[in-house]
Amino acid sequence: MNHSFSSKVAIVTGGGSGIGKEVAARLVEAGAKVVISGRDEAKLHQAAADIDPSGAHVRYHAGDIAKPATATALVERATQDFGGVDILINNAGVFRGGFKPKCNGG
Image 1 (cartoon, rainbow, N blue to C red):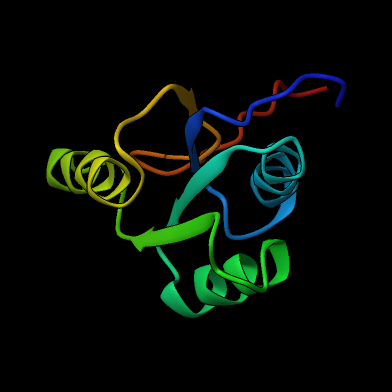
Image 2: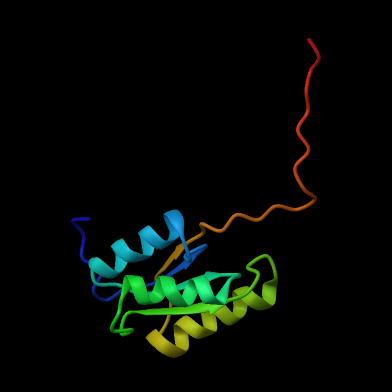
């Protein structure tokens, strides 16, 4: 990443693993402060430690982002710890009602 994000604060949903974790790591490398979210607190704790062992640039918030109260708490956490939110990366996968594959006979 060739951009400086030194004065920016980002929220990355689905930040406990995979693409979200990598995006959060790249933002921290570029100077941003990041709050990652997901449903698994232990996974988030480990991801935050992997991304920034000092803990100075990463926080995490566990909860179901499909619930408005979780989204509100996530923004409040970023605001309290880092002074606001400049960037939002919506990476969490939310499925409602399940997945039912359809087959067209043949």
